[in-house]
Length: 414
Image (cartoon, rainbow, N blue to C red):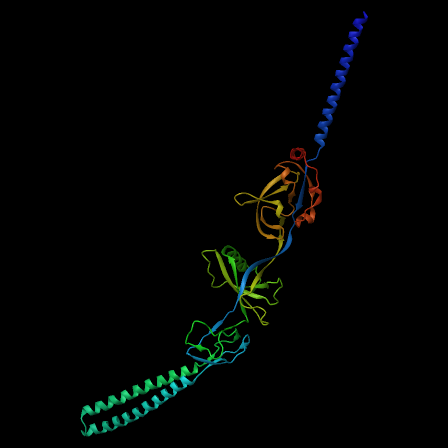
């Protein structure tokens, strides 16, 4: 065989060997990649395992204090204010004299009325004597029947005049008594708007002062009608702590954040829904022996609704809201696959929602990594434990490596 032919065979053999080695290498690489892909775990997500918790439920209602009884002191007769007989800001008793008007003009009017009464009494006595005498004379025809009738009418006229005089005297006595302006209730007196020497008029628009009862004091709180219906149902079912058949106990929180030491009673009677706001004004009665609460103060009324020993709480970041307002959460089932659950949530408790329907104790709810997985996909679960359950961010998933899509996205962004 010529040398040229041998060279060609050698080159052909070498090329075939190289092709075979390349094919083996590609097969090995593809097999290795397939094995690694099959062995690769699912995407890493963080979950919280739900369990029953004991939850003390309460409702906080905004409100303002108000005096239960208010008396605006106004004069009922006109005159010059002679003296103020109370200390501003002090407690006064029912019937205590607060102001004294100059009584001289009304004393004179009362004396004149008394004189009119005595004059009418004298006229009546005379008319009565004449009528009695004429009654005897008419029996023996000593006087005419007309004279007798006139004497009887004069007696009746004198009696009527006496009644008018006595009524005038009583009116004058009442008017004279009005010069002593008294408090109709027991309470605390406000500042006086007038000083001695001022001219006051009967039933004037401006009050001389105001007396308010402060113990107990009322607290007016507002609540939506929807929430009120819920409170009524829970009160009827016995979940609320009752003070009596139609009342529930409340605790006040003052403007500075401190708790008021005395518990009050919240009643539901006599409520009306405001057509403009849809809210209801409720009244609470609160003891105020130390006069710490003053009318007009802003307070918060905390209504204790009892304890729920089987409450389920889920972190707020695990709950997703749809445009129609419905709530849902992603859970990881026993096969480590992602499933979507429609749920119903109640009130917010810190950074968590109270779950009413849709979840049960033992469910693993996804709190982190939900943006990188799809429903039905198998995932790797990292239990975030108590920190995530309380709404505290946890480290393992937050520091997890992004998947290929996330890495590509981050690369493009850079």
